[in-house]
Length: 90
Image (tube, rainbow, N blue to C red; front, side):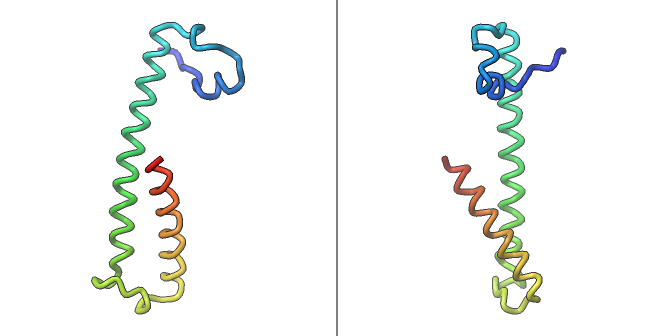
């Protein structure tokens, strides 16, 4: 099977129009899109699990009992997690 160029990139650059793609190529791009969506959902599920573990540190969620380094890392994770969670809602 030949490699299909990234459709978004192709359209963004104006190299081709959708009509220039064959039905087979369009189906391949759509199948790749679906695969990437499934992978994204799986990765986000794992990220939610990790956030649940971090948020409930020590069994009660009291971060003040953790080291300063741990608290800093947890705050960075929390910030990134909520940015991605919000973006996923769009």
